[in-house]
Image (cartoon, rainbow, N blue to C red; front, side):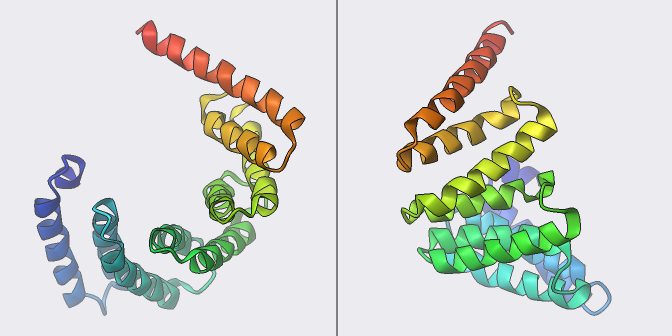
Length: 201
């Protein structure tokens, strides 16, 4: 929405709050409208780092989607991923891990184990493990995400850059420097091309 993109959080909160109240009145006819309104307002709170206020909104949005669509519908994935981010911000990595494992299970069932749709959840779960120092658990997840991105976009595409850097860092954290070095070289080459392209514009 315009107010949020412009950084006018007060106006955005008024507009999203009004949309939420309106959706409450039509919940019986369109429960997913209410779920979306709750999700959007939670997104605003998350942008403002009001994580404790965002959590119950996302929890309710998730519950509505589960009731309307079923517990394994892929539409639940975005809410679960966002909940995981809230849990991480609130210092609850176990809850974040559980939400992301559930997300992965849902998306793998819907799209398969090597689909682009699962990359965000793989990287988010790797980040949870990495933040806890569980690098051996994080590294294969990050590698799997990188492989999917490389197959989808090509090995030297800018969309692969961050994943290359994440994998290289985790390889170094697990004392596998020789495996990290070629990934770092590829990342530097991609970044150099991007910087050159930006400078020529």
